[in-house]
Image 1 (cartoon, rainbow, N blue to C red):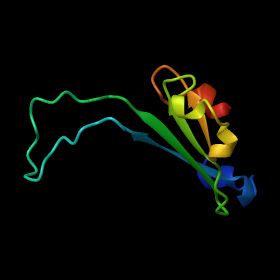
Image 2 (image 1 turned 90 degrees about the vertical axis):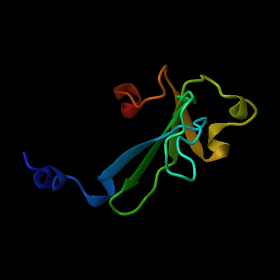
Image 3 (image 1 turned 135 degrees about the horizontal axis):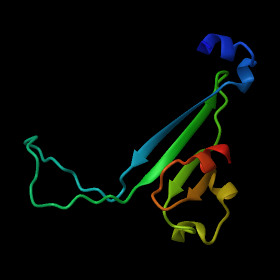
Image 4 (image 1 turned 180 degrees about the vertical axis):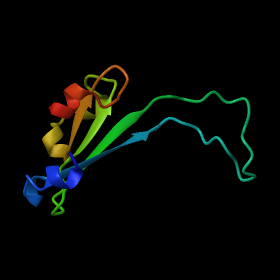
Length: 102
């Protein structure tokens, strides 16, 4: 089935686009001013996955952060709703089918 035929079944307010981005928050720069690769540094793989969702009409949903920790330290004293985003967790900080359907 073609994409246009599938999208024709749904009104524009129900058509959403989801995109995810990896944020390696503890990574050191791998290049200096000379544009040459810096050797001797171990690459940090600590990451957060950020999920952005908006509808065809421009309605933006709250950002979802996916990390490894079940309850990160900054979120212990306040709720996610008060922060303006959602936080989920799994072993590798990746988007999974379970998180997608949630």
